[in-house]
Image 1 (tube, rainbow, N blue to C red):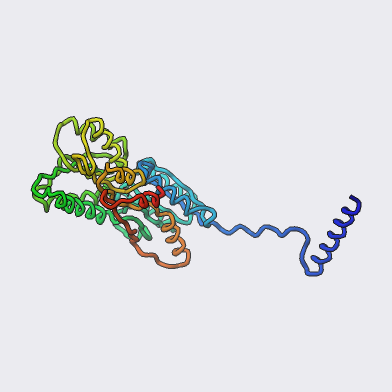
Image 2 (spheres, rainbow, N blue to C red):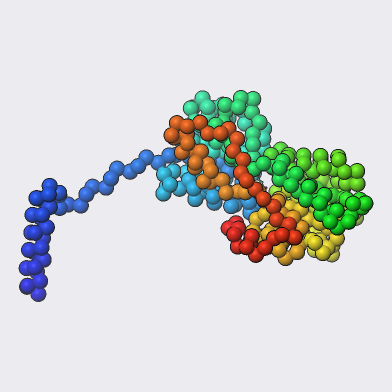
Length: 334
Ligand code: GYE
């Protein structure tokens, strides 16, 4: 024992001498000063869908402390007034950047002018905004919603000819998302143009499903009570589709490739791809929610003094019952 203590003591002396000889202190080094974090205020419009939850997670992951960000997150719970409040709070707190996922396209001029007056760069994510002065935001990143809608109607046209239904009336039940949201406006626009150019296509009804499963269920359930006929559902997001499917089940109606109703849905979240693979949904048009890393890159570009593109569109695909595979499912994290 004594010998061991002696050994340790001589080791300490050796260490001290060594440290002194190379000019080092024996005391542990002071912590390096903390790197400045970039403070970002993110106003998310709500948590209405699986897509939105994946989008929020992607933002939280990318704008993490580890990645050099201090993220202030606000969920506006589907109210534009709450987004105004959040932005004003971010301005007061003196954040470095504001990121806005807007509920609707219009109404942003005043509050974004306040951000501009405070010298704060604003990045828009997902849906777009219509403002008089385009310099109120630096950049937008999101989906090409018109292309998504066109993908859907072109697929339908092709499917109808594959099924030799060209001479049948196509009656479309259109379930719309939140009024005034870019995803709603442009997916609706694509459908309207297609209906206008196909004499046998018509809209059986337009239902307001607010992008939620609960609303999707309620509006379709109530519509089914009218007894109106239809053979296609064009639903502007997966969660409304899930609600619609529940209402169809309760009414004893069949859907999917082997059923009476063709179902077209947007987003292509994991649960929708599962339904597509199981033969309950005909077409899932992809809408990519993983914008976190894209927003982080835009901020890094701005930090480096670069001017990012004004509009950044993401690449997207689609999955039909004819070409979906297990691999598509396993590759989908949300
Ligand atoms: O399709 C829907 C969500 O704006 C792209 O909003 C987004 C849409 C998405 O609630 O699920």
